[in-house]
Amino acid sequence: MKRGIGVALAVALIAGVFAAWYLYPRAGPDRAGPDRRGQTLMIGSEVERRDIAAKDLDDLFTKEGTAVVKGADRIEFFKQEIHWESSSDWKIIQQRTGTAEQLSKAREALLSPQIYSWGRRGGHKKCGGFSPRDVVRFWRGNESVTFLICFTCMDIGVIYQDQAGRGRSWIIADFQPGKQQLKEVMERVFPGTVEIHE
Image (tube, rainbow, N blue to C red; front, side, top):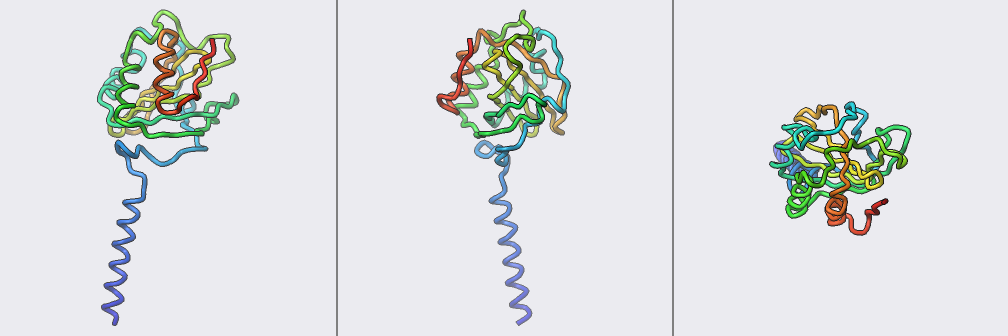
């Protein structure tokens, strides 16, 4: 009798462990992480912003960040609700794990030097403030590069984070030449949601 109870408990324990492993959101091409709607990406409150003009992709992304985008194995897309008090109050309202095709298209656009205005510094425009309501995040293992996209300012903030989640000082760049390309990237995931302010 006791042996039968012990076996039943062991089977139930194994079944519970398997169920938890299966149901827990695991990193991967089809499941980049848990649903974070209502939470914050916490970008900007953790790392300092450098208000300079980037010279090239490696300066904007960091060399490590460029390697992450080139070798990314998964991608996430977000829509944010912006609050002016603090960037830590920016809240995720929509989240999608991208397909292989969406990853490829986003990588192609964001790695193109032609979409950025290298001679024009971002982040200092009279447009009401940097409001990155659209976000793209590339992952390679536990490293990531996050692109904070503001279609009001035509500015994009780029943050590389290492495997421990540590960010480096980030730069905002102007993407006026590539605004249509970036709109297409976001509307492949969130159709009809991007409004470009001229």
